[in-house]
Length: 252
Ligand code: LIP
Image (cartoon, rainbow, N blue to C red; front, side, top):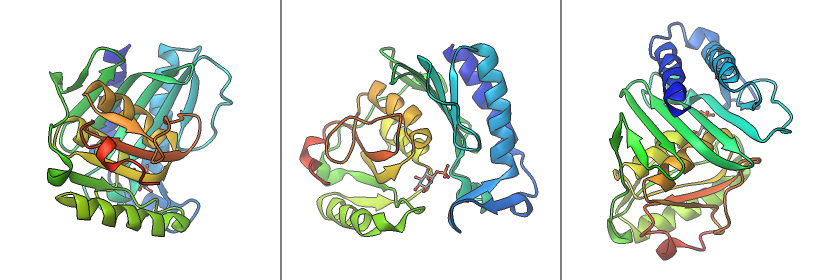
Protein backbone atom coordinates (compact mmCIF):
# COMPACT_ATOMS: atom_id res chain seq x y z
CA UNK A 1 0.00 0.00 0.00
CA UNK A 2 2.72 2.52 0.95
CA UNK A 3 4.65 1.95 -2.27
CA UNK A 4 1.52 2.54 -4.35
CA UNK A 5 0.71 5.73 -2.36
CA UNK A 6 4.25 6.91 -3.08
CA UNK A 7 3.79 6.33 -6.82
CA UNK A 8 0.51 8.28 -6.78
CA UNK A 9 1.92 11.23 -4.82
CA UNK A 10 4.91 11.45 -7.17
CA UNK A 11 2.50 11.63 -10.15
CA UNK A 12 0.59 14.41 -8.35
CA UNK A 13 3.86 16.23 -7.65
CA UNK A 14 4.79 16.21 -11.33
CA UNK A 15 1.48 18.01 -12.09
CA UNK A 16 2.36 20.61 -9.44
CA UNK A 17 5.98 21.04 -10.56
CA UNK A 18 5.08 21.53 -14.25
CA UNK A 19 1.99 23.74 -13.69
CA UNK A 20 1.66 26.80 -15.94
CA UNK A 21 -0.69 29.84 -16.00
CA UNK A 22 -1.34 29.36 -12.29
CA UNK A 23 -2.36 32.94 -11.43
CA UNK A 24 -4.91 33.05 -14.26
CA UNK A 25 -6.56 29.95 -12.84
CA UNK A 26 -6.74 30.96 -9.17
CA UNK A 27 -9.91 31.78 -7.21
CA UNK A 28 -10.77 32.78 -3.63
CA UNK A 29 -12.68 30.31 -1.42
CA UNK A 30 -13.76 31.52 2.06
CA UNK A 31 -11.79 34.80 1.86
CA UNK A 32 -8.94 36.62 0.07
CA UNK A 33 -6.30 34.50 1.81
CA UNK A 34 -8.02 31.15 1.12
CA UNK A 35 -7.06 30.28 -2.47
CA UNK A 36 -7.77 27.40 -4.83
CA UNK A 37 -6.42 26.82 -8.34
CA UNK A 38 -7.46 24.56 -11.18
CA UNK A 39 -4.41 22.46 -10.25
CA UNK A 40 -5.68 21.82 -6.69
CA UNK A 41 -8.89 20.46 -8.24
CA UNK A 42 -7.12 18.49 -10.98
CA UNK A 43 -4.58 16.94 -8.62
CA UNK A 44 -7.32 15.93 -6.19
CA UNK A 45 -9.33 14.31 -9.01
CA UNK A 46 -6.28 12.33 -10.14
CA UNK A 47 -5.38 11.23 -6.59
CA UNK A 48 -8.99 10.34 -5.72
CA UNK A 49 -9.37 8.13 -8.82
CA UNK A 50 -6.12 6.24 -8.19
CA UNK A 51 -6.55 5.84 -4.43
CA UNK A 52 -10.12 4.54 -4.65
CA UNK A 53 -9.01 2.13 -7.38
CA UNK A 54 -6.45 0.91 -4.84
CA UNK A 55 -8.91 0.65 -1.91
CA UNK A 56 -12.54 0.95 -3.12
CA UNK A 57 -13.89 0.33 0.37
CA UNK A 58 -12.33 3.55 1.72
CA UNK A 59 -13.89 6.98 2.20
CA UNK A 60 -12.19 9.92 0.49
CA UNK A 61 -11.78 13.18 2.43
CA UNK A 62 -9.97 15.84 0.39
CA UNK A 63 -9.55 19.57 0.87
CA UNK A 64 -11.32 20.51 -2.35
CA UNK A 65 -14.96 19.91 -3.22
CA UNK A 66 -17.39 17.30 -1.94
CA UNK A 67 -16.31 15.21 1.04
CA UNK A 68 -17.56 11.66 1.57
CA UNK A 69 -19.62 11.10 4.70
CA UNK A 70 -17.19 9.37 7.03
CA UNK A 71 -18.92 6.04 7.46
CA UNK A 72 -16.22 3.51 6.63
CA UNK A 73 -13.34 2.04 8.62
CA UNK A 74 -10.70 3.12 6.08
CA UNK A 75 -10.40 6.75 4.98
CA UNK A 76 -8.00 8.63 2.71
CA UNK A 77 -7.32 12.19 3.92
CA UNK A 78 -5.75 14.27 1.15
CA UNK A 79 -4.39 17.76 0.58
CA UNK A 80 -3.78 17.94 -3.16
CA UNK A 81 -1.62 21.06 -2.85
CA UNK A 82 -0.66 22.01 0.70
CA UNK A 83 0.85 25.48 0.54
CA UNK A 84 -1.50 26.74 -2.16
CA UNK A 85 -0.56 30.39 -1.66
CA UNK A 86 3.13 29.51 -2.05
CA UNK A 87 2.21 27.58 -5.22
CA UNK A 88 0.32 30.58 -6.66
CA UNK A 89 3.17 32.98 -5.81
CA UNK A 90 5.91 30.62 -7.12
CA UNK A 91 7.41 30.27 -3.67
CA UNK A 92 8.57 26.65 -4.06
CA UNK A 93 7.40 25.27 -0.72
CA UNK A 94 4.31 23.14 -1.41
CA UNK A 95 3.45 19.46 -1.30
CA UNK A 96 0.81 16.80 -1.89
CA UNK A 97 -0.11 14.94 1.30
CA UNK A 98 -1.97 11.62 1.59
CA UNK A 99 -2.87 9.85 4.84
CA UNK A 100 -4.63 6.47 5.04
CA UNK A 101 -6.57 6.23 8.30
CA UNK A 102 -8.17 3.17 9.91
CA UNK A 103 -10.75 3.72 12.65
CA UNK A 104 -9.37 7.21 13.33
CA UNK A 105 -5.68 6.25 13.46
CA UNK A 106 -3.27 7.18 10.66
CA UNK A 107 -1.66 3.95 9.41
CA UNK A 108 0.14 5.12 6.23
CA UNK A 109 1.39 8.58 5.21
CA UNK A 110 3.18 10.20 2.26
CA UNK A 111 4.14 13.86 1.78
CA UNK A 112 5.86 14.84 -1.46
CA UNK A 113 7.67 18.13 -2.14
CA UNK A 114 8.17 18.12 -5.94
CA UNK A 115 10.47 21.15 -5.93
CA UNK A 116 13.02 19.58 -3.60
CA UNK A 117 12.13 16.09 -4.87
CA UNK A 118 11.74 14.90 -1.26
CA UNK A 119 9.20 12.16 -0.60
CA UNK A 120 8.54 11.65 3.10
CA UNK A 121 6.80 8.40 4.04
CA UNK A 122 5.80 6.30 7.03
CA UNK A 123 3.82 3.20 7.97
CA UNK A 124 2.79 2.95 11.61
CA UNK A 125 5.38 1.03 13.60
CA UNK A 126 7.91 0.88 10.75
CA UNK A 127 9.77 4.18 10.96
CA UNK A 128 9.88 7.33 8.82
CA UNK A 129 11.83 7.91 5.62
CA UNK A 130 12.84 10.61 3.15
CA UNK A 131 13.46 9.23 -0.35
CA UNK A 132 13.85 5.81 1.23
CA UNK A 133 16.47 6.86 3.80
CA UNK A 134 15.53 6.66 7.53
CA UNK A 135 14.94 10.04 9.22
CA UNK A 136 14.91 10.93 12.91
CA UNK A 137 14.20 14.02 14.97
CA UNK A 138 17.07 16.07 16.45
CA UNK A 139 18.12 15.92 20.10
CA UNK A 140 18.27 19.72 20.41
CA UNK A 141 16.97 21.26 23.63
CA UNK A 142 14.54 24.20 23.82
CA UNK A 143 17.31 26.81 23.89
CA UNK A 144 18.58 25.55 20.51
CA UNK A 145 15.11 24.96 19.03
CA UNK A 146 14.06 26.31 15.63
CA UNK A 147 10.28 26.80 15.61
CA UNK A 148 8.08 26.65 12.51
CA UNK A 149 4.96 28.76 12.98
CA UNK A 150 1.46 28.60 11.58
CA UNK A 151 -0.80 31.62 11.52
CA UNK A 152 -4.27 30.13 10.73
CA UNK A 153 -4.60 32.81 8.06
CA UNK A 154 -8.15 31.80 7.12
CA UNK A 155 -9.53 32.78 10.54
CA UNK A 156 -8.06 35.96 12.03
CA UNK A 157 -9.76 35.25 15.38
CA UNK A 158 -6.68 33.07 16.07
CA UNK A 159 -4.16 35.87 15.34
CA UNK A 160 -3.54 37.09 18.89
CA UNK A 161 -3.16 33.56 20.22
CA UNK A 162 -0.81 32.60 17.35
CA UNK A 163 1.50 35.57 17.88
CA UNK A 164 1.42 35.14 21.66
CA UNK A 165 2.66 31.53 21.29
CA UNK A 166 5.23 32.58 18.67
CA UNK A 167 6.61 35.25 21.03
CA UNK A 168 6.83 32.80 23.95
CA UNK A 169 8.59 30.19 21.81
CA UNK A 170 10.93 32.88 20.40
CA UNK A 171 11.89 33.98 23.93
CA UNK A 172 12.59 30.36 25.00
CA UNK A 173 14.24 29.10 21.79
CA UNK A 174 16.70 30.08 19.10
CA UNK A 175 14.52 31.50 16.28
CA UNK A 176 11.35 30.98 14.22
CA UNK A 177 10.35 30.52 10.57
CA UNK A 178 6.98 30.72 8.76
CA UNK A 179 7.02 28.61 5.59
CA UNK A 180 3.25 28.22 4.88
CA UNK A 181 2.80 24.49 4.26
CA UNK A 182 1.96 22.59 7.43
CA UNK A 183 2.47 19.01 6.18
CA UNK A 184 6.02 19.87 5.05
CA UNK A 185 6.67 21.64 8.35
CA UNK A 186 5.94 18.37 10.20
CA UNK A 187 8.47 16.67 7.90
CA UNK A 188 11.19 19.26 8.62
CA UNK A 189 10.88 18.42 12.34
CA UNK A 190 10.84 14.69 11.50
CA UNK A 191 14.06 15.11 9.50
CA UNK A 192 15.78 16.87 12.42
CA UNK A 193 16.06 20.20 10.60
CA UNK A 194 13.79 22.03 13.09
CA UNK A 195 12.45 21.16 16.55
CA UNK A 196 8.93 22.61 16.86
CA UNK A 197 5.91 23.30 14.65
CA UNK A 198 2.63 24.72 15.93
CA UNK A 199 -0.60 26.09 14.50
CA UNK A 200 -3.69 27.13 16.47
CA UNK A 201 -6.21 25.59 14.06
CA UNK A 202 -5.62 23.28 11.10
CA UNK A 203 -7.82 21.01 9.00
CA UNK A 204 -7.16 17.25 9.08
CA UNK A 205 -5.73 17.32 5.51
CA UNK A 206 -3.05 19.72 6.78
CA UNK A 207 -1.82 17.46 9.63
CA UNK A 208 -2.92 13.82 9.25
CA UNK A 209 -0.01 12.61 7.10
CA UNK A 210 2.71 14.74 8.72
CA UNK A 211 1.68 13.71 12.23
CA UNK A 212 2.40 10.01 11.54
CA UNK A 213 5.70 10.78 9.77
CA UNK A 214 6.84 12.84 12.76
CA UNK A 215 5.76 10.22 15.33
CA UNK A 216 7.54 7.48 13.38
CA UNK A 217 10.68 9.69 13.32
CA UNK A 218 10.66 9.80 17.15
CA UNK A 219 8.77 13.06 17.59
CA UNK A 220 5.64 13.87 19.57
CA UNK A 221 2.39 15.44 18.32
CA UNK A 222 -0.49 16.74 20.44
CA UNK A 223 -2.93 19.58 20.40
CA UNK A 224 -1.72 22.76 22.12
CA UNK A 225 -3.50 21.74 25.32
CA UNK A 226 -1.72 18.37 25.29
CA UNK A 227 -4.72 16.32 24.12
CA UNK A 228 -4.42 13.92 21.16
CA UNK A 229 -5.03 15.11 17.59
CA UNK A 230 -8.43 14.28 16.10
CA UNK A 231 -8.24 13.50 12.37
CA UNK A 232 -12.01 13.87 12.01
CA UNK A 233 -12.12 17.60 12.71
CA UNK A 234 -10.02 20.79 12.69
CA UNK A 235 -7.84 21.20 15.79
CA UNK A 236 -4.68 22.88 17.05
CA UNK A 237 -1.34 21.14 16.55
CA UNK A 238 1.84 21.15 18.64
CA UNK A 239 4.59 19.04 17.07
CA UNK A 240 8.11 18.65 18.49
CA UNK A 241 11.24 16.52 18.52
CA UNK A 242 9.96 15.03 21.78
CA UNK A 243 12.68 16.54 23.97
CA UNK A 244 11.11 20.00 23.65
CA UNK A 245 7.51 18.90 24.21
CA UNK A 246 7.16 18.82 27.98
CA UNK A 247 9.40 21.91 28.38
CA UNK A 248 6.98 23.88 26.18
CA UNK A 249 3.72 22.32 27.36
CA UNK A 250 0.68 24.34 28.38
CA UNK A 251 0.92 26.81 25.51
CA UNK A 252 -2.86 26.93 25.15
C1 LIP B 1 -2.14 25.92 4.51
C2 LIP B 1 -1.38 25.32 5.67
C3 LIP B 1 -0.72 26.42 6.49
C4 LIP B 1 -1.80 27.27 7.06
C5 LIP B 1 -2.61 27.90 5.93
C6 LIP B 1 -3.19 26.85 4.99
P1 LIP B 1 -3.29 25.08 2.26
O1 LIP B 1 -2.73 24.88 3.77
O2 LIP B 1 -0.41 24.43 5.19
O3 LIP B 1 0.06 25.92 7.55
O4 LIP B 1 -1.25 28.28 7.86
O5 LIP B 1 -3.67 28.64 6.51
O6 LIP B 1 -4.17 26.11 5.69
O7 LIP B 1 -4.59 25.81 2.43
O8 LIP B 1 -2.30 25.89 1.51
O9 LIP B 1 -3.50 23.70 1.73
